[in-house]
Image 1 (tube, rainbow, N blue to C red):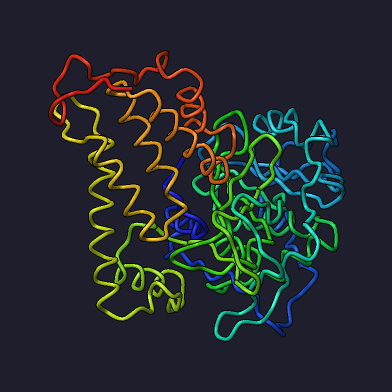
Image 2: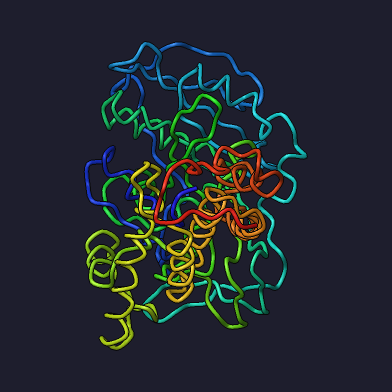
Length: 422
């Protein structure tokens, strides 16, 4: 479970794409966008290899382009029936495609039940001054409530960025988008691109997430058009996780949201101090942050910055599991308090996790279970029920004495006098 970083996921692409990350996902009202794409001839510019037959769940013969530094080519696979005909195009190797074909997302329609549907009337899209289109709550939404769940429409194996020239990759990308069902293709092409150049590639560079989507451990870039409707705030009220088995990205409220309040995700490292947040968002995401946290008077932002410095230090100290560590349960409880004061509910699960472990280290059973339960409640919203840290906390809740952390430092003096009070 990562530290609650939300949506400036494009920062993870810079090593592939060769330019600064951008996270401006705001839709552009009135922008005249194409709904069709011109695909260049494969015979003139691209070495297409390995004629493959159509096999379920794919709707076309895969187009394959030779890789420059890999044994396998990279191929375009498109399913028009995926996710109740929403469709998806996948660019990956034939071996990886076979692994993908066996996943529940493609073999079990029930696995996608509820995906690409949204609860009625809980929000509406409105124009926001200086912020493009935002999603505004129509009713009170409680922590843990689902906002929406959606599947990706374009999926790209990240190895392709080092395996072939940009022109070959862009050919597969453009053809992949062109083959999507019309409604899905139009939703993709309506997304904002920040860098210019090839439209399809620009949209990827501006909107993609990087994640693991298959059992082969490969990294993929995914584009989920609906994420473009969530603006940034340095103290978010919405978080998301992607279920790799069902290829569904789930969005939930991380705290209670009032009527007429906008939904926000966080695009950046939540522990950055104010000026670093402003600098990063302006230089990498293309906008000046005007969220309430950044717009406070200097006195308040200085206090906030000092808390963030201490929070970062506490996370470092609590993560140290050497025999010379100095962290204690008092540090973990201070961390929880400071995170709450900062309004960073998206990293509160991590603070509870450290508190549960600190209690387990010294044999405090009831407090171990209490903090484990609190961590699970939030971590499921951030990372899903299959996340390693969620399962760790579940095992601490079920049987603290059987967990590896129980009395882990019982024979060492760590952070002062040890206690085994339950």
